[in-house]
Length: 225
Image (cartoon, rainbow, N blue to C red; front, side, top):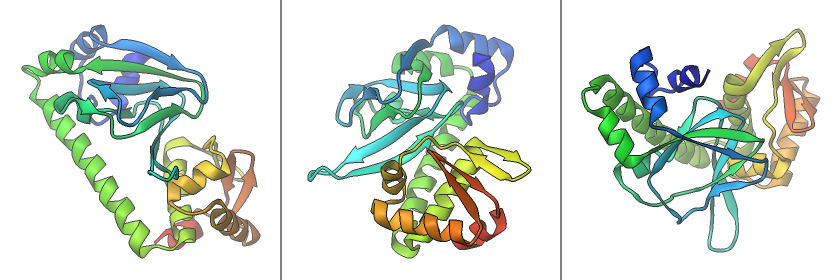
């Protein structure tokens, strides 16, 4: 099962059984309860982490105490990869949104394991490029997209990764509070709640505790552009 989780990520998607077993033997394990923090922004660290089960949030805090969520990650997704090549202070705080388990890989162990595996090295470059592209998209959305558009885009992204299709729509158990959802789109909770209420009144989605049911994907997609 854990090897299958490893292969879900861009970095390790091309692994054969031998390579996956060798990698898994080099990795440590960690678990967090919901609400616990794995590490804080500014902490030192040299490990990459892969989510096996659960969800985590990556966030930053401004000097005046405001919080911004950079990403919500689930099984097969990784974080902390920058520290593998540039060990130093962590650029974000990572906390568990649900009970979560991880695999971890230290800087020195990865460098040894990469020797003779150029496909994985290319995968790592793709992972870093994807992270940079996402950062550029987020910056552009904050400038060019209104709050309802950003809310729609965030919900569709969560639906792609955590959604389950049923007869009444796509059930998205994002496990986020209203405040966390607002932090994810860079807006106030009141403005995000207003956007969600508007979507619900139009019949595009149904609101449920820490989840939504998207009933009109196409209209949500048009609103996210």
